[in-house]
Image 1 (spheres, helix red, strand yellow):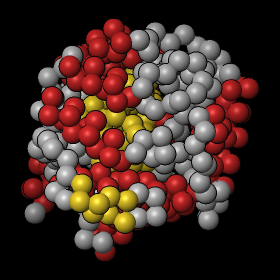
Image 2 (cartoon, helix red, strand yellow):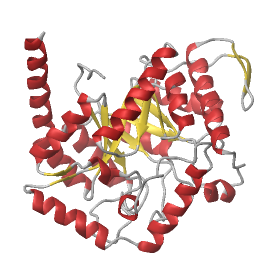
Image 3 (tube, helix red, strand yellow):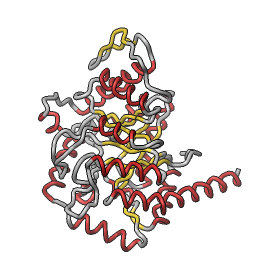
Image 4 (cartoon, one colour):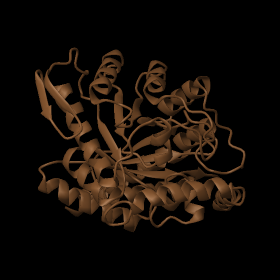
Length: 366
């Protein structure tokens, strides 16, 4: 796997859901309100972040008592910034692709093309039940998501769009205005066979849960090989929870405190829900199949990526991820505003310096 010549990109999870990014009773100086998030978006933009990802949650659970809707929230963050791209999560089922296409096209027009979407196939059965949405089998959820993506892209690029799927149908539909150029990027997540195969066919970006460099390389190689066979290309984003401190001991102490103060009941309930969702896949696997209790304290296995230590250690690990084909790191933090600023000031410049050094060595070796 050859690393991209482009600089690795950085994104952060938007805390538009209460409770922060860890299921722990540790102090988290992070707010879910709009004032906190507007300021955070501005800090992130100034600190070298490329993207922000707004979360989708319809019901309370696992510490997330309050949840702002992601499309409206993303637009508010875009209005407060000038360069940052904001990725709005969409959940097929509650969203119809015609409504989503129109929403996102309008926001794209109003923000000079800075909006993207993340198509979430769904893992929380109780959420679907609570809002009266049918709960499909695992691979059926991904089939629906693929049709949703094909419909979005068709509406955004074609006039008189006609589509005949099992879940969505369109007849001579023309959307005007269409999104600004470039078209909104389409992200998706998942680790199951169905998720990876869908990415290799239709998605611009694939998000995977946190993991070791070796395990991430296996996923990257698999997806890229399948994408090439489909005459498609897909970029890879990896989830990570960053704990950057002046010393490794200080960073590790923070991690230990997060785990010690974890909410066992909430972590175990979350683990039960997501592992059941994964077991429903034909291969009996999913995003959280190999996740321990400690891993599950961070929703998307962010501790596994091991961006925990000094700025120098973290920068080296990020470049190692890039070397196996990762294009973007999606970051969570304990205290978002202050830690995003620290990460931008102390870590990103080291990453850029290492990228330059690595590129120079590669050029000299040719």
